[in-house]
Amino acid sequence: MRPRNGEFGIFKRKVGDKAIFYYWTYDESGKRYYKSTGKLNWDEAVKYCRSLQLKGLLLSSSHSNFLAYFKDFFLYDECPYISDKLQRGYSYSKTWAQKQRTILSTIIMPEFKDTIIKNISALDLERFVKNLSTRGINGKTRNHVIAVIKAMFGYAQREGVIEINPAEKLRSFFVITREKGTLSKEELTELFKVDKKSNLWPNDRHYLLNYVAAATGMRLGEILALRMCDIHDYRILVSHSWNSLDGLKGTKTGKTRVIPIGQQLFKALDRLSQSNQTEFIFSASNGKQPYDHKTVYRYFWQALGKIGIKPDIKEKRNISFHSYRHTFNTLLLESGMNPETVRLITGHSAKMTAHYSHLQIPALSFDNNVVTGLEAN
Image (cartoon, rainbow, N blue to C red; front, top):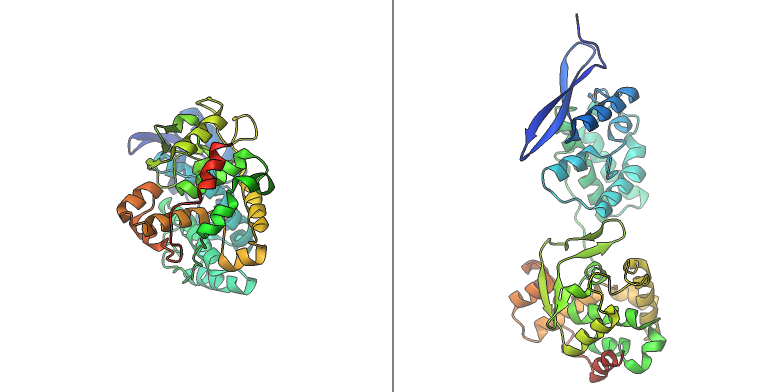
């Protein structure tokens, strides 16, 4: 008796150091297909297969249309591609998944949603990404679209849904990236003068947060992740980052680094931490959760405006919160510090350290009243 389409069976397969459950099923002709459930537990694998069975998606064949097969892609807890990456030991942030999902749902899905996967050719994809320019989508975003398409079709090929990957030879677009602007020594001094602190910043925590960015070159997510247990012996141990989707996670590079700080900055951080080792220093909820990124950006932009860097100037010079990091990197290099030491302090690759050198800023130190301002917090 010929096996019927819609039947399935569960079996275990060793993938690296883990045992992942796969299922088999049949097409209309009785040909058997195999596919990963992405589950490590038998019961969960069965529930997953029954869910697919009810939706008519148990057989993810080349006859599936784009929407049916890719509907769960980049939804963090439902995406088989992400599940497979995590099981193989790769990291995958919820923030990145959200960005990819936005590109898929707003740009790619409307174009291909009803198209049978096997009928999408390399020429179709090439025309699609080229025509995005007529919709006002820039080269950087088009490159993100290409990366998302390659991830999706690469997964479909590995799962046996398609024999040939039509996205394999898609080429990225050349993009001229504007170099991030830097702040001058005089502008840094104006931002952190103690006699202007109450006029520029909403409170001491935002004042100090911005000073930490200027004086250490830390990324904003790394600053928001700071707890007093990360600060000892006049050094900051940078081992975590924070965002609202992923919470506390590793640094961008996955590596830990140490940044030396002065006595006044150490004391200021100690006072604001309220001696609680486990709570976040820069927080509006008594240390339970760090400030939101958008709140930090808003007060930063307001402070820039108050010292004369208006929106049009900010746009022309390409100034952002990340400019603190570029400025810090440049000041260290121009002070004569060994580039390898700068790289270790900032957590950059050698290539990025060289890229961040802006030669117009001549000095490393701020005015003494900045240090006095920190001491007086």
